Length: 156
Image (cartoon, rainbow, N blue to C red):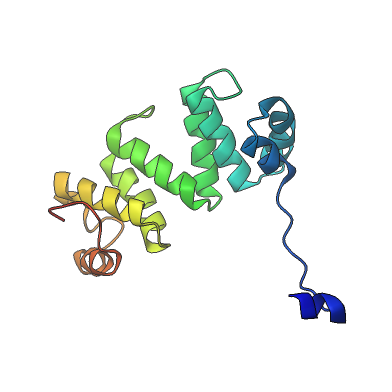
């Protein structure tokens, strides 16, 4: 890196959103307006964070229904953590009605992108409701994913 700096050839770093630093320091008064700009601009990661803040009532009045709605938007926008949280919420009936079929869709998306926690949760849902296999993925694809991801829960 030092040699690159000397030669003037330094790869530009991706800038972190301004709200991230404020959140790291727990400065919600500064973070929230910055986060809302990113949310309104359609940033899936910002929508996931905002939804989580609403779910927990962290720096903002708690609103679980609105929080899950923002997390759903994050998932639809491609945020892996949003997919995981939405799938987990649907699987558990947490702040949304329980829906194993939709839970499997979101958990499958997150697991196939590499989130081991999503593979764990997906495995639990399939064990509880084996008839969900074949709707969004085949038994062969599920078994292959489980071999690759090696969920961490015993008995899977």
